[in-house]
Image 1: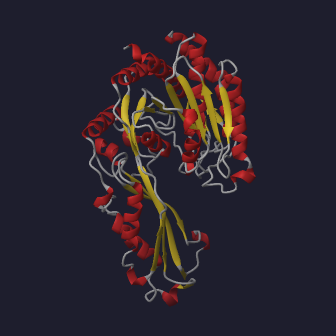
Image 2: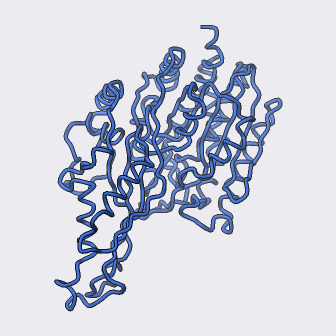
Image 3: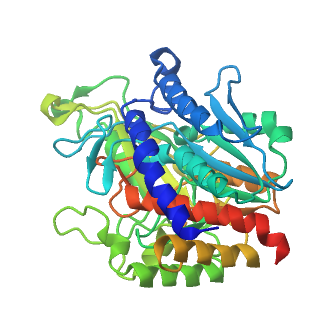
Length: 473
């Protein structure tokens, strides 16, 4: 394969075909079902599917025997399924998603979640980097190989519409399509992060999540605080105390030993190396307010904290008026939404049960305490790279970025990876992405770093070629 020609093709294809389409995609407020229960009635998800389907069909015209189908199981979000025959019976599965997180407040002036804005190397707007670019990058990589006549394996592309809600529809689609998918020997997922924009980053693990709502109720209705305080306990004070059963408020460490695992030595060493490569950017990428400092001083420990150790975040509250509307009332209840990230190899279902028992046992003052946590989502730990893939990753990073690759776990969850790991235990995984410093997925001012998108596309093409030729090694 002519690497210079590959890079030039990717550059031109991104500018002429991908960026115009992904700009239109950003305009569509296709929030994931968890954030838009009326997603069917609103039709935005359908708009996004039609946009990507139409674009993809135009690209597939040049691939002999290629098919594209929008699969719709009853009552579930749709899924784009593409099958591109190759030059061998081996299978590469490429994955992404098209649903989005909600708007969030705090976008800078002139920017907005559904308002695509290109500034220099960045395309701002919700969903461009997480994860709208995936389908475009996959087909661009394959088209680049086709134009050079480079042989490859059969490629299957799956783009789901429920990832930001926990991928609860995806298992049904995988079971429905399992015979058509086959047994992939390589999975490429383009829904992850990168520590910087200077090299190819491979995700080695993903944390799970044990989320739920904790409600403390002390009254059937609000009462005058001057009349009741000192007699009726504050629901907030009780909630605050219950959270201290989970978390040390002084350090942020989780108190329950059942929520920890033994960190593999290889991942500890990789965390140290990632911290060395990134330096202060391990924490410098976050928009700290005022004089706020990180929780620990050691950057290696920071990496391990966000990838292999349990951490609690309170991501929502209910039961309270906004300050301007707040009267002197002792409120009847307090509800907090808890998001507890669990280590990659911990059983999230058991973690939810541990949290529930910890919070509900012996409630202070006999208050009504309920934790509703569902089943949780377990994390994922990548199998070791086989020699051919380890070599290919180095080559792909050097060719696309000009630097060797780096390896680091991610703090988020991609349920599809754990699911595939169970179904295909001998499969090799390449999980990477464009969500680097300040790209701010899920938050305000999310952006797609365009040069990284192009380089990741180039790297994917190289990996697909290496996968096909590996049997010659």
